[in-house]
Image (cartoon, rainbow, N blue to C red; front, side, top):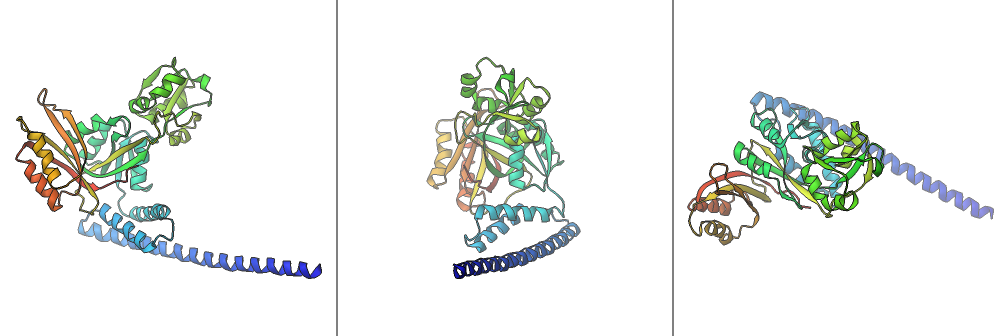
Amino acid sequence: MLLTQLVDCNKILDVEQSLTELRKKIDEIDEKIVSLLKERFKLAQEVGKVKATKGVKTFDLEREKEILKGILAKNEGVFPEETLKVIYSEIIRACRSTQEKPKVAYLGPEATFSHIAAQHYFGTSADFIPVETIIDVFEEVSSERVHFGVVPIENSIEGVVATTLDAIYEYGLKVCGEIYEPISHHLMNQTGKLEDIKKIFSHPQAIAQCRKWLRKKLPSIPVEAVTSTALAAKWAAVDESVGAIASLMAAKLYHLQIVAKNIEDIRGNSTRFWIIGKIDREPTGNDKTSLIFSVADKPGALYEVLKSFALRKINLTKIESRPSKNEPWKYIFFLDCEGHAKDPLVKECLEEMQKYCIQVVWLGSYPKGKAL
């Protein structure tokens, strides 16, 4: 019996010694990581000084994408890739903050889905500027008070955001990125009790995405549209009779209680956001191109345009018509296709379109976002 106890004690001591040695190695690695991060930060400061001297732009989205691509290749799948992307994105953006922070306008206030998309695309170190409407985002970018804007372009359930399509045509800005965000809507108020809700506020798109749930669960409660889901949450925070349909981030930010989670009518709901600015993105090999065009008023003109893409096996990912603001009963078309405007086949196609179109406007070529 005594011998068995001694053996067990020896095993425990061996395990503790092994753990101590392993933890010591981890501590040593952490120390090296911090030391290297400090060194990287200082080098980023030097880069910023050189850029300022030469008048070079302080942020380079292409460079950041290339860094992430290289890091993932070196990882060889050992460290969880999504986690590594998040870690390195924040490292890059923290180092970038030693230079000029990119200013990013979004449909506010804080905690809208546009705000969430902006944070996921640019990281938390950017300077985020909330504005009241989608048009205000375009105004901020156009006037160069900010570097970029984040605007919703389409929802997987409700379709295109017409305001964004009309504004991108009117303001002549470039689409320089996209990001897809999962959308989950939650009903919230001050108490967390359904019976305290006398009216519901939310953005028109959110209301539309939850209409069946609202009709079934709260048929007698009036629903009012406001300019954003976060504004609805702000209303609920000051009026105990108001229920808001908004994000979990909004509930946390405005200290609201969840009454019902995931009340959207269809699961898998997501919204595609455009990153708008005044820069041109270089080809990455995994790009998308957005265009506006209007065809000549003659039979087969639209067919000839679409045939130009089909013959070159260029995949169209979206085509949408909108009424022209200049001529009644005339239409302009918005089109997304795979590839970059500098790719030979896409370039050929754009040139051929000129034969059948009154106008062709290139909105931008940019890295494809990961559809959900």
